[in-house]
Amino acid sequence: MNSLRKSILALGLILALGASVQAQSSKAGYVNATNVNMRSYHSTQSKVVGKLQKGETVLVLNQASTNSNTVEAILLKDAKFYSQDGEYRFTLPKGKAVELLAFDPEEDVYHVAYVNAGVKGFTKLDRTCVKTITYEQWYYIQTTKTKKRAWVLARYIDLAEDVDEDSIVVYEE
Image 1 (cartoon, rainbow, N blue to C red):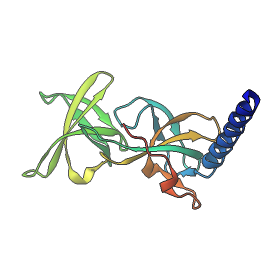
Image 2 (cartoon, one colour; image 1 turned 135 degrees about the vertical axis):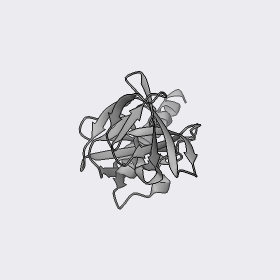
Image 3 (tube, one colour; image 1 turned 180 degrees about the vertical axis):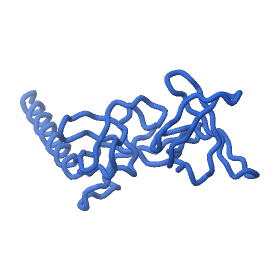
């Protein structure tokens, strides 16, 4: 009886591992941009743990949406940031993630903040200079080359055509 139970458990484990390998191999994706940030969590405020380059292949292991209290955006052009007194602090290149503090409809601008090396800077940007990304989809990926795992905005990963996005496990917080 005890050996039968062990055999059943072993068979179940083998089947589970086989299914896991099958599922991961069917979730291939390709990076569609250059210098894509790999992050420790599905938020642009989390630590960058690596970079991906256009054309790299990845496995999509999970997905999540951000439910952030902050409104995040990506800069679509370089932007200069200043102290609250108007003193120049730093310039961020396009592609950086920033926090949108407020929208001023009279001026048609966003009030934007960013902390760079511990120094907080502020600026105002026309709405065409940023792309909001709050509540966007994120993928938890594994690189096929180095096996490193991290979160990446889903917009930067094109899934292989044979992948059904509904088959990816959704991460619930």
